Image (cartoon, rainbow, N blue to C red; front, side, top):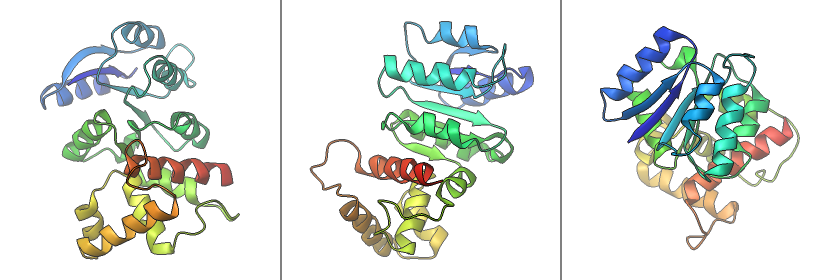
Length: 218
């Protein structure tokens, strides 16, 4: 699985390259600025991009802008962005195209190496890996929204789906049976009008709907 890494801190960049390279990924490029990232994505897209949101020379949103532009050029290009804190506008940018294959992870919460690698792999396979704190801030609002039909438990399940948890992991987190989780997931699909014949990955589409509507209401 081919990966491009963009991070301006040399130690972190090398650490990510060693970490992913030692767990089955082929690191085709590890760069430290926006121009180098743009060049790395110009012609031959990797299987997944891992990039800091802020890159030189401006240290604003260069990494995110280049990654989202690459997703427009190569629809569905999997992207994991790293950030020091939750930036709602940037989360909206990442989710705006409605495709799966997206991750938003906070740097100071990426302490579990195995979970980080699973998150990158999950995104590369078209899923989502959204930090729980990002989800919490996006859904913290008061006005009604198109997801209002969901029960509190169904919202909990959907939020954990956004983090990338599978049914067994959700069951463990919420102290439920897998059968109960499966029922809640089915209810979410039904209420969001995502029948089995719906094109695309229903789980990912439900998550993206959840997060996009959450941001609009915030």
